[in-house]
Image (tube, rainbow, N blue to C red; front, top):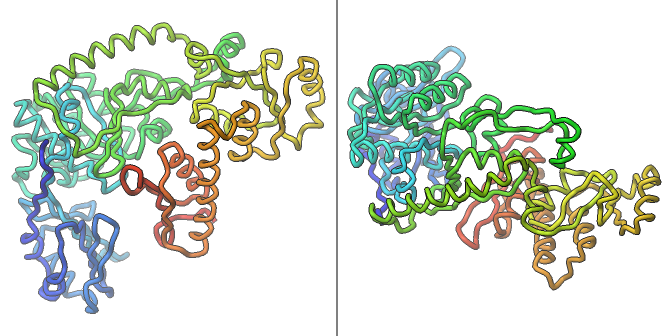
Length: 532
């Protein structure tokens, strides 16, 4: 297993700091610090990777301190960034309305090795890879290490398109962290797309590495590069593949999404609405990797298939990999690649049988028997979530003649007299929901499918309801002024429901902890936005 190692050059950063700041830093360990924050009229801060913040004594930052630092670094570029040549440290400025620098964020740059050991076999497949994840989880770090791996170990021609010198550090000479890869600097972010194309046209690369694809023009440039047969390693704005699909600006990276209107017969055959979403084209990136946290990655090995599943509403589970997992030898990797190819061929043949089945219902029909549910005034979206995420043996039908169960919203029952009459004629069991809330629909579905306390799903339902109640209590605490609230550990499916409930209240949440201690942290105070 490749050992994870950290290399930084704190001495070079400390050399540009005022003496009083250097003195204030002495009692503190900066090994796990991510940045120093120096704002005019306030005391300095050290921010750590675990979210902890330490204040540097009682002396406030003055104009002389800001000027001391800015005089020792290169002038700020148009994006208000500068650096220290030969290092990965970055200094970003905050200006007032007159352009004067009134604040500095000194980000501590590190070379981290060993973080891609768990995906080395994927990198060796010569496929284009897109990394997703929130800021600070290590996307750029992985780009550096992949650049070095592909350039040095595989001997490929690698060009790093480096906007704001984020990947290879400041100065004319690239940082050794990217190995023998070449670096093309980008003077301003708006020119990143142009440099991407220039790299392909002028320098015959086999691999291009680019950080933070964020505009439609950059997405189009990425497609152009991929269509020329160049391997592309990149990151993009967005935390998950689902977010990216819903982003009209960047969805082209994973094939794009278009709205298709079906005929009546086709819609009925699919069991879907007449207007459905489908993937437009082949994705620019073959593989998508979500960086959940610094130690956990979710890998979608077939982007096209993953996007199709998400658009059709089918359940899909990415392969979860841990940074510290044991890494196989090169011979074992090649063997695994061959096995993967055989598996893909088998899956392709199997998928041909489902070629024209675009709904989860059609998929489930070919796998297992299940109940058909007819609903009246009940939220189809909520019911679908219950059925899909818990893999219940049931589906929603539009024809009451085909139904095994009828679920009706109690408040609208009077308007459904005809439906209820037909259900009685067919001797169909009728169940009523009091509201379209998730817990209420879950409770009624549980009753309708005769899920007893002795069954596994009963426990899940009870756990989910309790977990969602805990979220509601936590949200109330946040709204009353709490900075953050941590919930009890839950499994991945329940945490997903909790995340969605938090998002509905325009709050932020993140998963923390490992293994059985994995849980939600809901953030409040100055760290969240509330829509009123």
